Length: 542
Picture 1 (cartoon, rainbow, N blue to C red):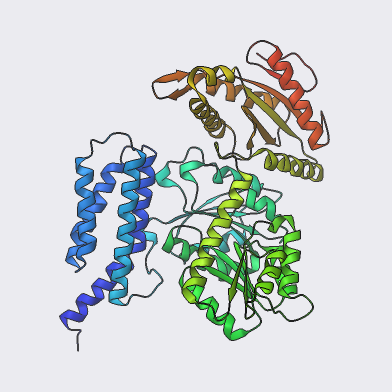
Picture 2 (tube, rainbow, N blue to C red; picture 1 turned 60 degrees about the horizontal axis):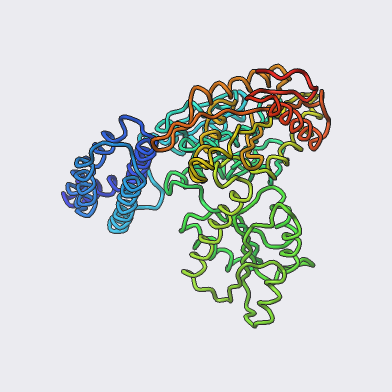
């Protein structure tokens, strides 16, 4: 016997709502393209909202139709000028309201949590790494998760990619003989509007430096043996919520308690890894850095929760990870002891479920953003001084192990004080931001770029000799000449002087390489106009 008309219609309604993650994803991509000034973005947004305005009502969801029609009409009234913060905010607000309407509709029709369609809406992934069985395995895991997959055996250059073609998920295979995974991740995480929603590093050797991974913008590190189990789950969650899910390490001996917490947090799109004791927790922390550590004070063995927290806080890699304790003890003395051990929050059992969920989500997100702030310059988004110098140390070690050379360039914006004096510091900041963007768009993906301080920038050029560094320096200066900074109605010419030092030709330690590049920069500036000088005191290059 065939289904009744009502049952058939309800089936169609469920299918329509199941497609919501993809529809919302496409709207968000169009908004990103609109923000970046891509010419077809407005027309695409109008079309998508028009279709939703019609289909929402047809399937019996008037709220979806009303929100979409309101936004479509508003777009029709827009003059089509350059996107402003207000217009983008309004569009993002409309998508957020639509997301809530779709969630309400999903609950109404009893739809399962997992989206059933994604690829046809263009969820994209890029896998960077050498040809081989491992890359094939990653491709298969992503394709079965509904992602369109592209591959790249090189550095995966992001700079020429339109916003609308950016990958939602970037997977980098760490292979010391083919790719520098940290440099690639840094290039993509600094790529502005084309930055992937998530960057995953697959480490066959299980030897990832967690501090460098965080500084490079990597959201998740996966050992090879967890690809089949973890990568599809991560990709599907990314497609559903649009941002990297928070990762929590739960240390809890009580199996029933742990099962309940895992189920609760996973409903809120939080990825939970569980272990039962402190020793195992330390082993897991050595392999991956979570966004939050949630644990019971009472743990089996000699390493209780308080001792584990103290050990975690002594490790520089984990100093910014939020630690939340669960315990039956709720006295003031107990809470003080937990805080002294390094805890950020203290929850007494039995824990209110809503409180636990909101606390984990907010603490984890804040911790992730804080770690990014620690490693990035707040104005330009480039590596800050401390992280850049740490990368210089790593570059020395890497080059020494692999018998390679590299160059270090220091650049100083000429007469920057005059810009500040004439136009003000806000305009000066825009000029520095312009320089950062020119450097990012001109340098290679493997080049690490940082703000050394003030109006000084620095670049680490992997596998580059003196001649190669001079060529890139020339390109950077030429790009700045051809594209002056435009702030409001003012066009401001920008010139830079540069100093170059090379490893191992000029120095064999990070501090000496930086010092020699700084000396060369000083000589270049003393030359009277923008120029490049080298650490060996050769005549400057005009």
